[in-house]
Amino acid sequence: MERRTGEYTKKYARTWQGALGVLLAGGVLLTGCSGTPAGNKTSADGRRDGPLPAPAPAASGGAADSEGAKKRDGLRESAPPDYLSTFALDVDTASYGYARRTLGDGGLPDPSTVRPEEFVNSFRQGYRRPDGNGFTVNVDGARAGAKGDDWSLVRVGLATRAAPARDERPPAALTFVVDISGSMAETGRLDLVKKSLDILTDELRDDDSVSLVTFSDEAKTLLPMTRLQGHRGRIRDRVDSMEATDSTNVEAGIRRGYEEAVDGRVEGANNRVVLLSDALANTGETDAEAILERIGSARRDYGITLFGVGVGSDYGDALMEQLTNKGDGHTTYIADEEQARKVFVDQLPAHLELTARDAKAQVAFDRDTVKQFRLIGYEDRKVADEDFRNDRVDGGEVGPGHTVTALYAVRLRAGAFGHVATATVRWLDPRTRAPHEQHGTVGTDAIDGPLWGGDSKRLQVTATAAYLAEALRGGRLPGAPGLGELSSHARKLAAETEDESVRKLATMVGQADRLKNGPGDGGSGEVPEGELD
Image (tube, rainbow, N blue to C red; front, side, top):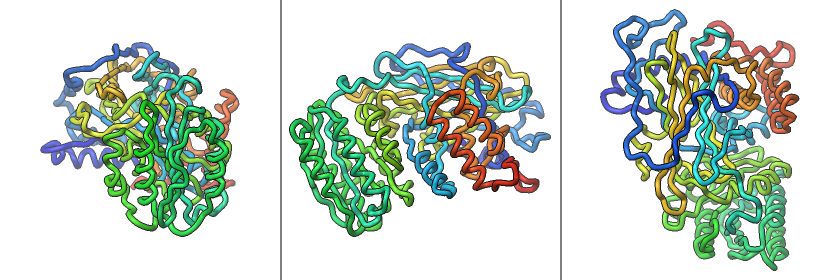
């Protein structure tokens, strides 16, 4: 749940631990409705000088509202010191891509590599987008399960402006840091990286520039910063010359890569370091924070961010995620040429350009209507509530065409009516560092519709991705269907949306159902009696 300090930590620790344990074991349902809900409002863009007001304290004195009061359903009332949830924005998708690869290979992903927010953020959402830099804030939701259930899903959707056309983005200066260690010799690793760089060489403009660094036990510069115009053949020759050898010294590669990025920095361009690796570091420094601390000035003084592209059936997910989080960038995963084209062609502007730096979100829930809440995922991106407007505290970097979705399981109070939550996003202009904020609200009337019978197919896809992620982590969200039923919903969604990405999601759900439940038990996914203990 949320971070707490001081006396509140001691006072409420036992209550929150009990509530969280039940939530993780018994689950919290995610459901939803369509579009921008009635009553959803967005403020004008601009800086807010004062703190976001916390919701009014909940009424006290009754048995139903007393701290730790035991309820008939086994849940305890939570009595947090605040009703705020704060996290850094995250546009990573590597967890979903790696899970898809692992399931396709006939195995279940390690639960530690499953991050629900990356599953959810892998899909198109259809949110309204702003005309200029900044965000729109879209908040909606629905009740969980049958009418009368007190658990609901609240979806907070943040969207940047549409990605520019190929000829409209600023020029790019990209330093590729390529892992050529022995493990990269396996099919689907270095061969896929080389194919990806060939695709990108075709996609980049004449006024873009690239440099190429390789690393195994040591790092080497194969190509200094070189403009594409007139040099595409030379770049392809350097890419084709790469061969796998020796061990994996990620530290040496990143350090040399940033040196090249600084030396070859192009004024007015989007300067990036792009790490392509299976991230299985076994030589030199292997701690992400220590690695990036050694090139800290390049990040701080020149704003050069790190974009990670993961490959390989055996993949160092944790290290890559930590590196890109601390390197003010993001990460994705590619398993085949189709995914490589998606990353290096379709999504290229979002990976190259920034519209927001150190972006954070804070959701304030209303004590009068909300009894409990839980953010699904973002465990690695949480920020102390009091640091929401502290611009020295790191947030997330977001580009054009990105969307960020946060799903909350919310338990409403009996008979609740009115305001449920206010969501605020804060970010810094990437060039001037000036802060800006935007917010949106949601009320009980906008989260009262059913999920599967609702009009928003995109929200149903979002919920399906979250349900799958939680099942792969070994948890269960309240009201969530078993994997067998979820597979049926996903197949129906794939047919209704005619979306290839949704079809692949449906395939993943079916694979997870068979691996977890076997082919002959119906795949109900129900938790046997006694397991909740």
